[in-house]
Image 1 (cartoon, rainbow, N blue to C red):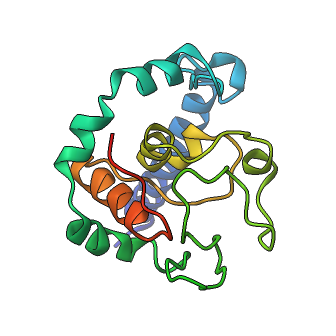
Image 2: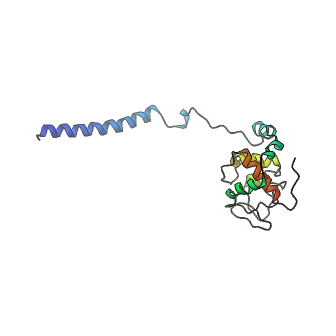
Length: 175
């Protein structure tokens, strides 16, 4: 192999490296990564907005609860047991104890440190409120520290709500 062939090989390697890094640099210039050039924005409705109110009013809670059953709710609630206790006299875990939660004011357990969002929410866990919260807790009450993704299935949500209602000193009659 003569020196001319070695020069061609080295030149080919250098040109390849320059092209790879050059394309990266050129694309950085063309597609500037500053926030000023973003063309899509995340829009979330503020708490208490018309969007949240429409979710509450558009859900027929009687029809929703008819989809669920307590036995299915107990199975689905297993997802919640890692962070919450449902037993009467049970203690708090990562999340507050959930015995008697239905129709209790939000953030009412005195021996649990709630996030500021839940402490200042000033509503009670009604059928509609619990349904909205279980869809996606982070968007229903902004700023709460619950890291649960939510229950998308209406049957799962209805079943968990019925299960929570049954785990009470005085279960409420269904609407």
